[in-house]
Length: 120
Picture 1 (cartoon, rainbow, N blue to C red):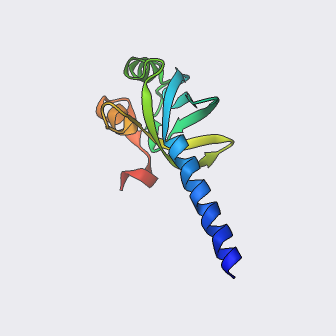
Picture 2 (cartoon, rainbow, N blue to C red):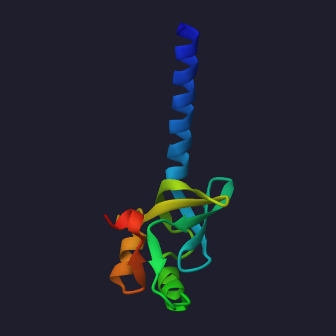
């Protein structure tokens, strides 16, 4: 029983350490109004902005331009994972130097709305 508890504790600690590594990353590229390419140390992966949806009929070009101005290459961001969709991490994203959520900032700038699962 003690060895099982030790194993479970070690697994939980390794997951927490892994989450800390994922939590701070830097933007490598803004691909679209809600998709970023981010990296931490030697890995890179796609991150979909959770909780943000474009306005109906919007192609997202203006939102993408705005987001690129807000997130120049190497901008440090904090990721709060909310799931995975088709191999892409869904996360709330904050600039470390500003602390505001990018989905909320996009909505405030008039580029879309919060999705129902996050607007409550």
